[in-house]
Image (cartoon, rainbow, N blue to C red; front, side, top):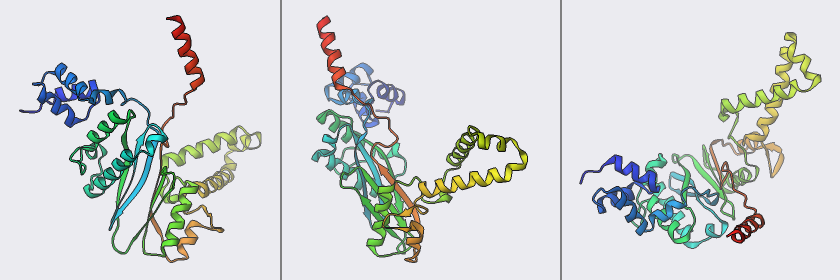
Length: 306
């Protein structure tokens, strides 16, 4: 039977199920939308849809390497407890290996890849969501390749919440390479180097610096004086360089020897860093903080009014 894309789209919007689940539900229901929703509910997939809007900020960040290909990825759940669950961790491993072998760089396509179980990533996450009762989702990933002359280095923190993947232009001692990955995990640089800084971010920082200077009587008059433009630019550049020494990996003081920058340390081993990725579970996602005392008090009050 031909796939009705409009019905598939409507069913997904109604239930938040995956594409393959929507197609199967419509097939099983004779392309009847209401019956398809009922079919999904009976299979427990619609139950997972109730969790689709939940905020999942816990989980695992991980790196898997095979020969000249590596994947760094994050799979989310809602609580630390589930983040240590064997079924969840098994799914995380299966997802990572599937991503690594696929070479697929589009996450919308990646979630429809089939795992070793024969299920798609979406289906497996949905099934575990139903079983455990928490939203499970692949949040992000990067697949990185290298050639034989280059080297991967990685670090995964023991709490499974921070993962770092580096690519070096040549092979060096594994301890030297891992020290850099551990440094990145601890110091959380935003960029690899000044050359990797986003122009939008840089422009915004310059704007903030000038606004701060304008609020300071000492600099406000200088900003209005065209003859002081060179001096103002020098001050701004000095502040930007200081900021870059904090947010770029290569310019940070190396934690094991603060007399050197990370770049100087790795250059001393006749090597260079050419790629850097760091994932921290839940970063950039607004967490919902629940005040359980207030929540229970409100519930008791509502029960009393019933």
